[in-house]
Amino acid sequence: MTHLIEFTSDVTADLEVGPKQRLEQMRIQKGTQAQARVRPYVVETPQGPVEMADLYFADGTVARGVRFEQFRFVV
Image (cartoon, rainbow, N blue to C red):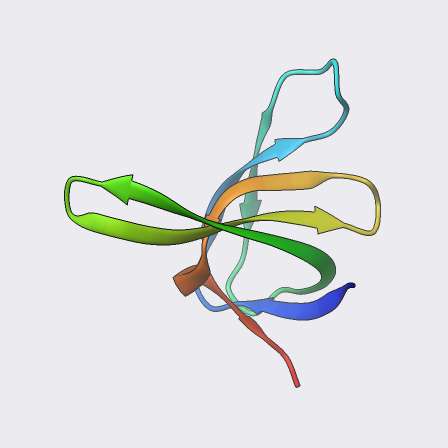
């Protein structure tokens, strides 16, 4: 299921372009909206658990390890 999301802050994300290519860094500006499938997970850090997500965009790219606090769902 895809969702319309909006980034609530500037984000530098690791972008997976293809399965055999290296991750690229992508800068996403605050206010950018995109359709994406969201795969949530939790990462344990020294400061406690952090909610993260991999974002699967319509063009086939994947932004890995985006914090939930950096985007919101648009209604």
